[in-house]
Structure formats: C-alpha cells, structure tokens
Length: 249
Ligand SMILES: Nc1ncnc2c1ncn2[C@@H]1O[C@H](COP(=O)(O)OP(=O)(O)OP(=O)(O)O)[C@@H](O)[C@H]1O
Ligand SMILES: [Mg+2]
Image: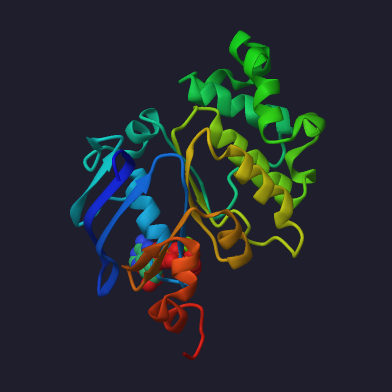
C-alpha cells in the first residue's frame, strides 16, 4: 500500500487479565471503506478507542497521515482529521436537529460553548448549516426536536455532526445497532455516498451491510487480527467461517 491513511503497528492493550488487543497491525487504504468485524467482546471498541486517542495502548504505534500520533490525545487527533461516532448515540434529544448541528459546527470551529444560545446566529453557522444538514439528508427535519427523529435519522444526524470538522477519516462504531430490518437502508446509502470524500472505518455486526459496503474487511477475535482481505477473501476464509461466521466446515 503506497499511502495508507492509518497504519497500526503491533498494538497491545490489556485490562487486568483480559488481553483486549494483542499484537494488532493494520493499514487502511485512503478512500476505502474498511470494515472491522468480530464477535461481542472481541476488542473492536477498544481498538477504536486507541485509534482515536480516547485510551492509550500498552505497546505499539499508530500513524495517521504518515505522522506518529501514538502520544497524542483525542482532541489533537481530531484536529488532524479524525472523527468518530459512538456505539451509543451522542446527541441532545431536547434540542432541534438544526441546533445540534449548529453546536457541532461551533465546536469544530473551536467556539466557546458558553455562547451556544447564539450559535444559530453566527456567520459561520449560517453559512454551513444547510450544506451540513443536506449532506446527511436531514434538511427536511431541521426544526424537529432530535428526540422525535427515527433511530436511523438520529444516526444520520450523529454522522453529520462528526463530519462538521471536515475529517479525513471517519470511524463508525456499530451505526446500525438497534435498527429494525429495513432501518439500515438509508444509513447504508449515506455511508456509500460519503465514500470518495473520506476514508471510513466501520465496525458493524450486520453482515449484509458489511459485505455490501466494504472494500476490505478485518476480522478481530480475542484482540487479534485473524484475517484481513477483500469481502470475497473473507467469505472464503476457513478460520473466519469457523471462528466468526459460525459455520461448520
Ligand atoms: N474499560 C475496561 N475495563 C475492563 N475491561 C474492559 C474495558 N473495556 C473493554 N474491556 C474488556 O475488553 C474486551 C473487549 O471489549 P470491547 O468493548 O472492545 O469489545 P467489542 O468488540 O467492542 O464488543 P461489542 O461487539 O460487544 O461492542 C472485553 O472482554 C471487555 O470486557
Ligand atoms: Mg463495541
């Protein structure tokens, strides 16, 4: 790979007796959707937390856009172009969709939160709000309280908020979690639309979503990268089928 946006080298992280990340290495190709799959407790969220700088590895290094970011905290990595959405949604339920987005725009500009009441009136918000809502197909929902959005729309809003800082790498931790069958369609479309303007690392349990979106897939089991390859390669991989897809081969 000539120019990986992210390179992880020999990462280790334990919590007491639990080895949550074990000798994990991976490179992400710029512009790809890279899916990270693995059973519950495999260490997916722990890995993401180390990539974003929310927790620090015991050993190993992380390079982002050719720079060693291993010692940097989360806000410093965010400034360099990393953004994430969480496994549990992080939006203000009692603010409108537009207000939530305005706050994210202000935060991305480094504005002071004490003045958030005036956020909707600032020049930068006026300029950026409607394209930001449009980007995640929520223009028609601007005035609605966030708690009245469907589960999928809340996720769209959260993704839109993560995009306000114009990230180069977007990390999505189980964006489809809690959605009923069919609820995943809009968000899958949105993720596909975003591809091309940025690189996406996607943690997801819904295999239909993973296999329809991913350029490459990594399988994590007990903290280890047991396989990385194209969707076809992963589908055919014996160890993956046994360990994760639950097939007897
Ligand atoms: N802060 C922590 N303290 C102690 N143990 C932890 C901590 N965070 C994670 N673990 C343990 O590390 C392992 C990996 O957890 P992690 O949440 O990363 O898995 P995951 O792949 O994201 O699972 P899921 O699919 O359920 O979200 C688990 O055994 C978990 O119990
Ligand atoms: Mg998790």
